[in-house]
Length: 79
Image (cartoon, rainbow, N blue to C red; front, side):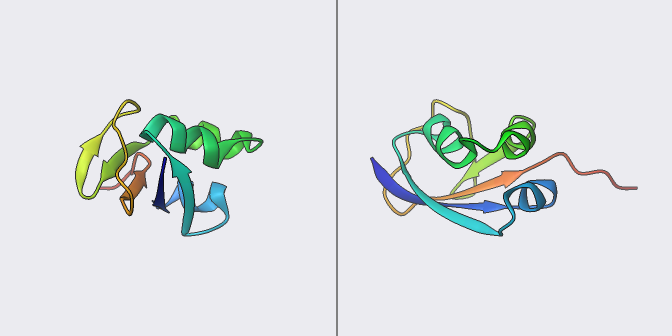
């Protein structure tokens, strides 16, 4: 497992109650499970998010290298 940082934006930041968190996880799916354990609202928001790993799109099966940065980007509305 690797220690990684997740950055929350918009609704994800609100649901997490913080801008960032660090956790140990082997894959993006593991990270999502870890940070949202016992936090149903955060789990709901993260289920809608697009994730970037060091600036590249990632999915739940993506392995996480040590020191990685993951961005959680919920859907944005705008005009």
